Image (cartoon, rainbow, N blue to C red; front, side):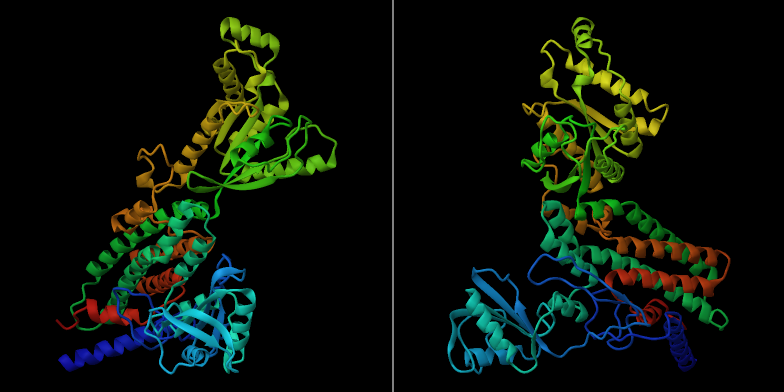
Length: 601
């Protein structure tokens, strides 16, 4: 009986493997044995592991964005290259020290030939050397060399790093000497990182995180990038994958063993699978709902400064950016195009857009184009700063304000139409500029209230638009009155949108972004998964949405007892999750079957 069960399990495992491989598309892609990231599930060291191939590109000399390409079984890119690659890894400009990295099987030989030494240096210890060319002429003296043996290196290959004096001519001569070695070539953009990915040293999310770290300009961006580089985000995705793989293995066992004379409680197992998949589905939905936050931290929040002509929009941009980015004058229509400026606001990247003055009546074709672009920026921004001119309050109204604290704001069709567009597009902050032009006895609070009343009355019963008015402030760009209050309100809005949910309500008036250590500490806690920005790119969101949809279909099929179809959808879910990391491991199914099911007990 024991032998019979053993043969039965082996037969079933083979059928599962064949069925999975067939339903994944037939053709199989082989990955190197090391192309895995540590997981609680063990995997076979051989076999087909990935149908999708993601090729990452990351510039070695600048903070270039990682670009990825997906290759299916119909188009496989040959990435195998036994050449030893080398490149400057510290920038090409004149500097104190320049680092030249050599990776590949010939790295050790390069060290021996350039240093005239037979013995390799101790791993990961700096060694002082003189470098000579093939003719024995000195290339550099008192250079440092570091040796990283495989697989304990960045690329997973043997690496030699030469730390030489950063003279451009010296560096050029050393690069030329390396190029003369057989089997050597200069590395393409991002090739060191690409080899690290292919050798399993980094997954695709870590590659993207490294790119984001190199290009980050704010503390929040660095924190987000480190969550991906250190594997915090990867661990969450792997947990998702392991959950689906476990459920799929159990479901496959039910399908294969249901007709055999074994103790398989189909109802209990499918009920457990439904509960587990429902919980996972909820986690995926939460990640999708929170996707905008991660993408916005990475790319920056767009804030659009809008208003009629000559109300001080460009002056406000210059004050917020602390630079003269926009030309200002008292001539209406000075700004004809959208001016974009990125700033670090409270630790978050914010992109300000100064737009052309918006008015309905204009015959100038260039101004019409500028207004059209202004409207596009207005609708796509996360926050609109609606700048109006206090001069809408006439002198006779100012007298009334002084006497009775009542102000009547002039009806202006352009202002009313623009305010309506702002509030219907999303969160808007009303800024009333040029308060310095009014007499000191004018009740500014009455002026502000009157502007707010006029704008909200124009919403015509649209409660959502009315709620989009976040607040209103009086200011003067000329004497800088009220600017600090504007900055504080914008920071508060940015923090409310981008800070992790459990950190948003913590009082911190000196800084509107929490320390890197705090964010990592929270994100590393599995009970605080909402602190981890899993989705930072469109492709992340697409894969997670596809996975959630597949699980939804799987649950429906389980409910209707179509277990084969449910298994098919769960395999699709596994593919989508694994594609986030750049790999799919079919053999994990067999491991789970043998580990979780004590068949024959």
